[in-house]
Each structure stands twice: as C-alpha cells, then as structure tokens.
Image (cartoon, rainbow, N blue to C red; front, top):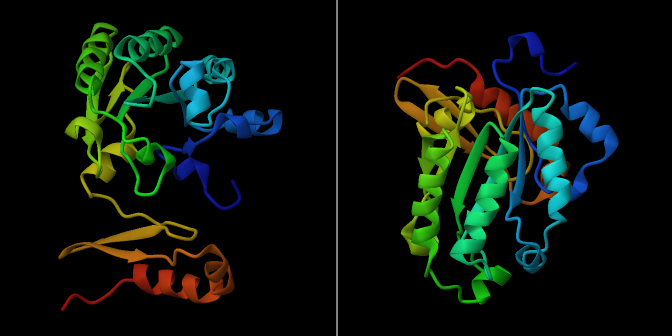
Length: 233
C-alpha cells in the first residue's frame, strides 16, 4: 500500500499460483485485494500427482474462503492433462461450478518445449470434447465467455477461454488481449509496454535473474527513459 496508492487502483489482482505456497499470513493479506487467481487445474487426485500439484481439498477450501469474503476468484482447469478422460474433466468442472467462483478459465494444454508432459507424447483425442462440453456446462451455469487467446503447441489446436458471471470480467485480461494498455513490468524476463501515436512499443527485461539484480540501477533508468514523455518525430 505504501508503493501502490489503492484509492487510484481500478482493479487489484493477485496471481496466487501454486496453492501449496499459501500460509495463514498470506491468506489474511490476500483478503484485501479485489481479485485472486486460484488454479486447481483438475480435481482428479491421480492426475494432480502426475503434474506435481497439491491436494484438491485445499484448493476447494481456498476458493470458498475468498468468495465468502467478496474477493472475486478466478479458477483454472486444463483440458488435456495426461491421464484425464473427458468424463473426469467434466466431473472436475462440475465440482468447480458447484463452488461458484466468479470466473472460470478453461485452458487447452500447451506442451512446452522440453517439459516432462511434452515427453509423454500426449494425444489430442478427447480434448475437443472437453472444450465443447465444458462450454455447454458453463453456459448452463450462467457463465459468459468474455476473452479468448491461443498459445503455441496447444493440443487439438484449441484455445484458452475465460468465463465470468455476475458482471465480473477481469479488466486486465480484456486489455491485454486487445494490446490496448500500458504495462509497467518488474522483475527478470518481464516485458513493459508503452502506447504512443504509432502504436504499442515494448521493452523486455533481461531473463537471467542474477544479472537482473546486479544491474538493477541500470534497469530502473531504462524504464524511466522508456516511459518519459517524448517528442513525436
């Protein structure tokens, strides 16, 4: 709060990441933000073990905890995880819908180069059915699709789709998909963006964390120069 003036913030979102990193202190702190992303990915315990994720009950407890405190929760499921059948995926989705998070995102598995999941030579069989039947289930539960994006190496050439209910779309997601907003990104491998009359310009940060820390002063100057007002040629 000393760094970011909350009274000027329209939307304050925390990407919580792995739920096994939550502590009572973090939970109490996160109750003060507008939105939080809690990503169970699946509620199939066997599949969770395959992808090295945490116990499903903890995810459910966290989702219910934050929604009960009027924090908008986005939860992700992934279509195409190894060992996940269409029926298993839909059971996970039904369970998530029953928890009633404000936002649900369905990701189509993207096989990253060199990842262990990519080495499993996964099949795209059934993924289209997961996405199609998932759409039907979410629409029947009054969730509206509001943003879509694609990544490389996605199974079945699908897409990631974000759904919301209760008029709770994530402004950040919409603006990022439209490339219509400036971004100040901090940390290694982050990309900041600036809008001018000619369009969107980017400045990437160095990827190597140790080098980034060594060159912090220079990076701060680069950022200040990048965002300073400039005469248009």
